[in-house]
Length: 72
Image (spheres, rainbow, N blue to C red):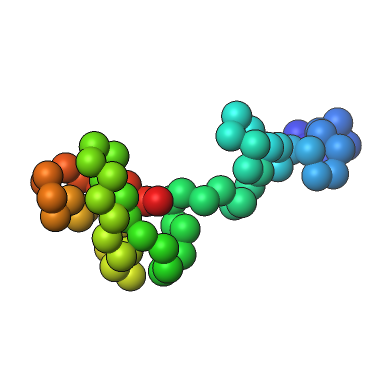
């Protein structure tokens, strides 16, 4: 609300509250910060490796082909 004149958006419809282009909504996605569990997947060969807690999948190289892994 600019200057408190009550002309801002209605409650709950401001920035960061919509579903966005992915349809996940605020903090409901499955990618970045997806938690400690799960696995990392190679986008090239499909190899899977367990996700290491505290280390993003993109920092791990695929054990088969060397490509950077993604969260799967």
